[in-house]
Image (cartoon, rainbow, N blue to C red; front, top):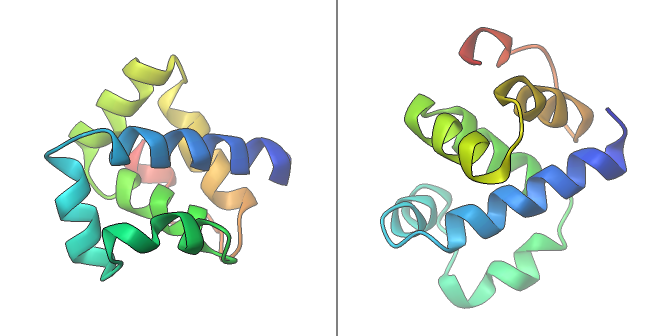
Amino acid sequence: MSRDDAEAVGIRALAFVAGDPDRLPRFLSITGIDAGRIRQAAGEPGFLAGVLDFVLAHEPTVIAFAETSGLDPSSLAAARRALPGGDDHYLAST
């Protein structure tokens, strides 16, 4: 997967998380990002990788995002590997 495609998946994942009243507070709590800084943080290197890390760390979230976005769950791991710090760490999670 190209980096541009991976970033597009990351942006979709961010929109998914930000649009969910249960997942967003958990994401903010785990990352320590203030809700008002999400747009600014989204432009920082590695932020979208962190969003995908958040999604990939919880199988029900992976499944919900894949169903909502129409993506194959394995594409999330592929996107993560294409972003900064990517490796094969999440292959077993999908």
